[in-house]
Every structure is written in C-alpha cells, then in structure tokens.
Figure 1 (cartoon, one colour):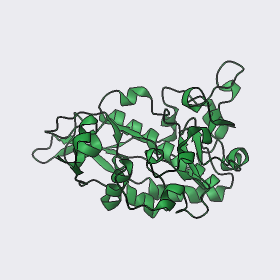
Figure 2: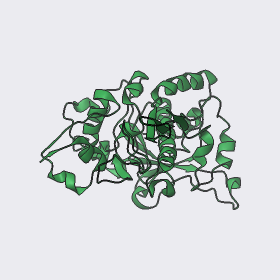
Figure 3: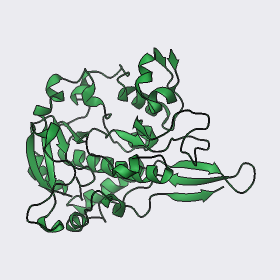
Figure 4: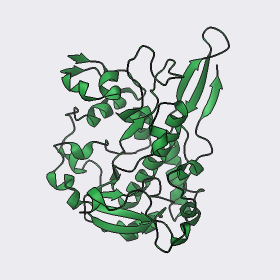
Amino acid sequence: RFCGGHFFFVRGGDAKRTCLAVHTTYQFSQARGKRQRLREHGLWTLDDDAYYEGRDVPGCEGFVMASPEDAPPRALLASAGVENHLAAAAWYRLAMRNLIAIGVALRRTPIMPELTCACDRYWGNVLPGCYIQGSDARPPFPRCPLDHVMNLPNMEAAGVTHREYSFLNNSRVSDTMRDPSNHAFVELNLDADARNGSVPRVAGVTTRGAHHAMRRISLDAYPTDVEWVAAAGDAKEPVLVVSSAIASFCTFKKRTDAISFDARMAKALRAESHFCRPGDGGPGSRSCEIGFEIPAGVADDADCDALRRAWDEPSGSFRGRYARMSAHKDS
C-alpha cells in the first residue's frame, strides 16, 4: 500500500512493513528533513561510498556516538505530555551538542542518538493530548525523526556534519565498522567524592552487556577537548561509544575555541516549535508552549568539577545546563 509520511516516519511500528511506497510528507526541515527521514530508514540511495566510510568529511578519523542504551530519564518517555517532551528534547539536544563537540576535538563525525518523542510536532493544535486530532496513534513515538527536535537546515548552515541514528545498521557500512568488537567504549567516571564510597561511579551505561567486547577507555566525566585528545586522540577504532552523552563534554581549554563553538551551536541548535491548544481569547486564539531551548554555552558553563559533583542521575542533572525548558505564549 501507499503510506503517508506520518504513518511511516513518526508512528512507525510493524504495520509500516506493509508499505510499498511512502510519501515524504511536509515537515519542519524542508528538503533536508525529507532526506534525513529517508536516511534514518535506509531508503536514501544517493549517498556514495564516501558517506558510509566517512571520507566525505576532510580529515575525518572515524565516528563518535552515545551508547544506544543511554537515554533521557525514563519518566520523561513513559507517557505523552508537552512538559515531558520538551524536557526530553533538552536532554537529546545537550547530548547532540556534546557529541558534536567531541567530533570537533577528535576529528570524528557524530552519529545522532535515536529519539523517542512524547509529543507530536504539528503546525496545528496538538495539545492537550500531544497528538494530531483525528489520528489514532498516540505518543510516545519511538524512533521519531530528528526533525522533531532539530532544524536540519540550521545544522547544515552551521557546518555540522552528522550521521543518522541507524547509520551502523545500514548494509553499505562495512562489516568491520559495524562489528562492536572493533569499537572502543569510553567509560566516563565520576569523582569518588561525587557520592559516598571510594570507587568512582560511571556516568551512564557501564561496560557490561553489549559493550564488554570493546576496548575500554577510562576518562573523567565532563572532560575538556584536551582531555579527550589525551585519552582517545590516537584511537584507531572506527567508532567511539560514550557511556553518557550528557556527561561527555565540558569545555574547550582555549576560551577562543569555546566561544567559536558556542557561536556555531547558537545557529545549529536554533529550532523553535510551537505546541498549541485552543486559547481563551475567542475563535482562532491559541495558547502555546514554545521549544526548543539551547543549553548554556561551553565558554561560560565550564566548571567541570562542579558538573561532576552535580551529577544526580536519574533525576536529570541535564536540567541545570538550561535556564529554562520552554517558553509560553498566548496568541
């Protein structure tokens, strides 16, 4: 059957396997968003071998990603709601900002995390239920498209090169690159005094399970670019996997580098979206929650020791990196 874009790319599920064709429907990132959605589902066939080998980025020395098990606090993804969605989006956007920063430090291309969305994104009213009126699908939506929390044209304009969350599942990626035993796992350790006890805790996911076969690199949580280079600058593995994306970066040692990076991220992370319900001002009025906010810049939010001390998983230490999660507007 011919499937609509919302059915295929947002709602997902096993039913999409019955689709013979899919409509790349309107979304908020123009043609780049359509291309990204097709890439995420392995349907974009115009990339050449250089894309899958990393050779499309001059000087690229591999890829960096968060562990697939690394995710926002479970409570934010357990049920639909705009507050949950905007908080989870803040977690994802901080994670992506950090992966981009690591990529800059190590000359690696970041692989974006897989997203779960607790609210649909739509130009009409989606509140209070966080779904499009008339739709029989209800969030949360697993594996929702990147354009639900980012603006792809702004990322491109800021010079951010990245890969889709499903990149390593694509058959055009070499078996060597896809094999986890050829990856390195970066275990981000918290200082021993961050919690009672003499053994430092690991921020995020540990080396148990799927990561046990990977070479382990130990690094203090919230490292600088210089610390990243010292720990993993000479890593030969094609993919680095970090235990916690939100604890994976603090700042650049040179303040000029930090300021320059923040300027890029101010453009790359600009992605305003309105989540609205009918307002109280009569016909046509709306009351909206507006996302998405940008985390504090690495030039000023640069006390790495304080960030380690403030770690309070699973309640969400990422919240302290934002002045607010969203804005409210009545129109």
